[in-house]
Image (cartoon, rainbow over all chains, first blue to last red; front, side, top):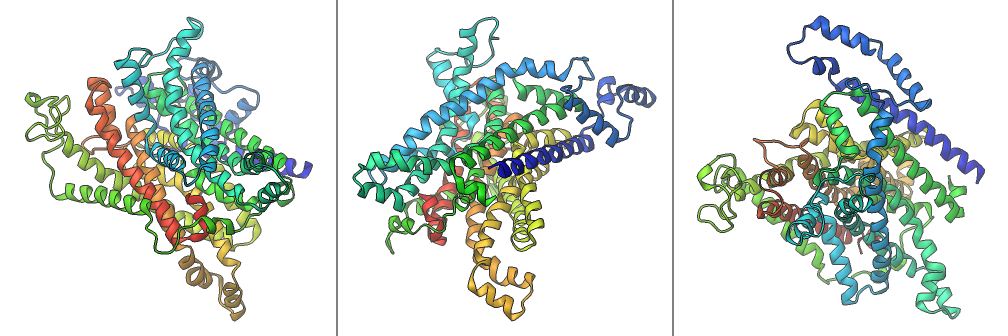
Length: 315
Length: 303
């Protein structure tokens, strides 16, 4: 187990380094000139050069890279060129919107998909099982932003129960903040639930045909009992992987849903920073997101090792 | 969404499960019609036919502004599905949107497929060190959310059809790599490959002559499924304003325009969404159906 953990953790660190180099080079090669954007179209070239030097952007790229990474290791994500605000402060502003949205969406997806997927597997072949399978097939085809538009059309415009968009900060009104999150979380959660319930169904169907389930049935357990006692732990293995892979998906969905409901989250911050060519802000924000996905995957893999002893040996 | 598909394969392999004999028990009897495949095929052919038709004929010029005809309802003479806030014909825009979806999504899926096949075959047949490096590289790329990557790329390089295709294919390649490697490893373990090696065939010959034809069905299925993912992702990017822009037309872009000009309470926001669901559902049904037919070993995953 210890060797497994050490190997997995080494890869995690290497992956973080590799992705930081990737993000840095991508944004720096294609990122545009922040000084030119700040000074406007009419700026003299000398003025732009001066500002670049002032911002430290004239130094060789490896130096700038090490500077950025060194800062991050000390917990300093850099500062915005334009406003001088620290990126950490900018993120802290945005996370109360994005984190509840993403986690809420994931939680809703799991709450809906696991029971429905398991139920559909036990009823496979019956009309209700077929109906659930068809519904999730359609759900997978629905773009997350369209789900958002339809929800706000029905619950916001037609019924007037919930706001169609916009954000009430937690500090102003907790219930207001919750209300502005209900529709976005629902849209995100339901679309992800469609994918997840399909995998749950497949995965449960697989284990129900395994020999150990048959043995459990033969030893006197009921169908449901055998599924609960020996089936679900085995079915959870592939599902854990899927949840890990869905983490990247979740971020993408969050970005789009924030735009649909005009929520001032991480996505809007990245969008506006990209158009202002605020390279450090973009770089650090994207790095935070990637690190988040990698941490989720690390947890997933460790969990995998705990759930399935074979994995520890295999790797 | 379908990035998860290869996760299932890896998970099954990790857990030490081979082809599932029980899956065959659930399988269809010979001669029984696969409804999903037929429905998916019909939907996909319709989608492709509409896109092809838009090359030679559309009801009107979708970029022609006609203020007098603004916001005509569904069923208006000359504008079958009505017009938008600037009087542009919606039916024409939807038809051209189908074409854009195909160019961007199928283009990206094809590019990703080619790159992923090269990388996957290399990983499967090379020394363990190369294999490990390629696969860990794929893992790293998979951790960068595709939408975020495409957003940064499109906003820096410039939005448009070309950069959207590029961004999507970078996002697809690692998934294809994993699927191709897994499939190739299965073939490389077969006796006829060992026989070819003993006969003195080199690696390239074995890959081209034995492995590639045997994983071809996997490639077709993956292409179909990622075509669908591409349509969804392209629509999302265009909705964010970093994908396709006028004079090109995309379904995601139409939805964004609808929301900006007349709010969501309008049939304008319904049509592009329906078009996306239709195309993606058709491709997914087709992909799953093809998997059933072409690769019985994977049938359990299609259920």
